[in-house]
Length: 137
Image (cartoon, rainbow, N blue to C red; front, side):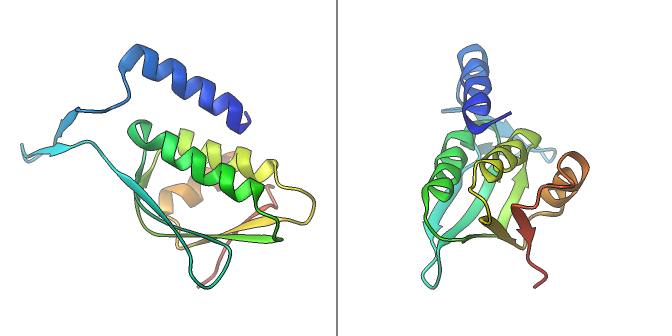
């Protein structure tokens, strides 16, 4: 599924379930919290983005815009600093894989400190995707 396919899926889900705006979530301890957030900011020393928060239904649009930016960039390597990402759902990993598949020959995304779940889903569903590299440090 490419980025446009994921967008269509998310749009259909939003039409049926809403986009998460105004939704409050109750944690197991009973505390009511606001909908998840995702913030994206440019890296200052190289081409890429620092991402913080949760990638889920309520934040897919922000995540997809960030990935579209990565695909549009001209450089060979695009860095995603993900150490502050606390959760990524399977659709979010799928959007990452779809964006990576749209990169031109020789281009790649380098993920710095992605959440363990993201690495597992990538390994499970896209084990041969060479346009995504997980940095060792």
